[in-house]
Amino acid sequence: MSLREELDTRLTSWFQYKSAKESHELLQREVVMELQRRRIKIAALLESRRRFELWQGVLMKEIAFKESRLSVSGDEYLEQRKDIRKMYADLDNEASKNAEVEAALIMEYGWLK
Image (cartoon, rainbow, N blue to C red; front, side):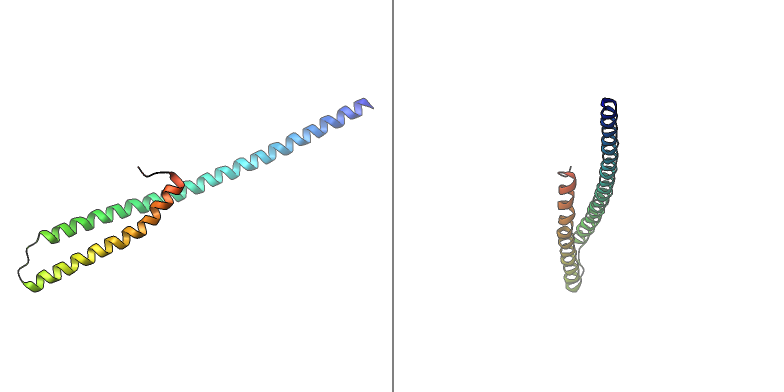
């Protein structure tokens, strides 16, 4: 009877071990998939941020160029001022949209460098 109990105990231990090993491997796969999903999300957010900063730099250079030009007539001056106001408004709109990207980056990745 003791041999039978010993065998039963060993089989029970073996099945528990196999079950725990399978659940551990499944959990490992889930963690790896979650990390890959986060890595993809962070890469997309960083790319979005990079594109915004590039666009912002180009727009600021264009604004500086337009501000440095001398106007020949009053109408040209008013048109130039209108264009510059529109550019600043576009910049403000895109900056507010980019704030959401920054918030998502901070939540996923930590503080921006």
